[in-house]
Length: 149
Image (cartoon, rainbow, N blue to C red; front, side, top):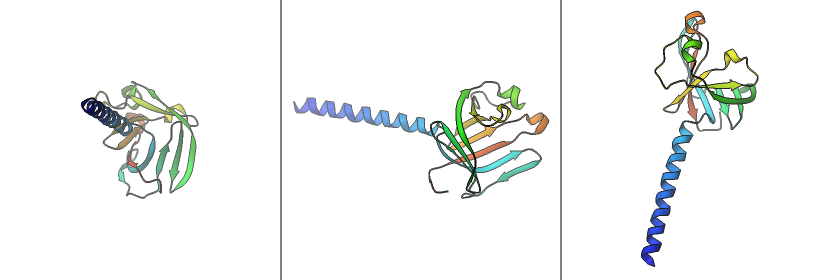
């Protein structure tokens, strides 16, 4: 009886550990949460770096977004994420395969300005526009756990 209880306890702990670990990895690749601007490049300006605490945040919930500039909401609404494999045609750049295969579709922003997105190492990178014609911006955000910004 003790051995059976021990085996079931071990199986339960292993299942919990694997399940929790998988959920944590999925969270890291999720757009949900707060993202703080840390860099912008493209356009007519060189790479611009932003310090932590700058107040330029994008917050994503399950289906809504809030864009903050200087800690003030400047745009909000609904969003969805779709698969889109047309990055090279849309932004006129060759990007390594497997990156920027999703696009954020904002409900209140023209489709042209709905960016391609990539999440890696706690960073959200957004690309929009054709770099060959208008030097479209590449915008980088870092995940911000703190809800006070």
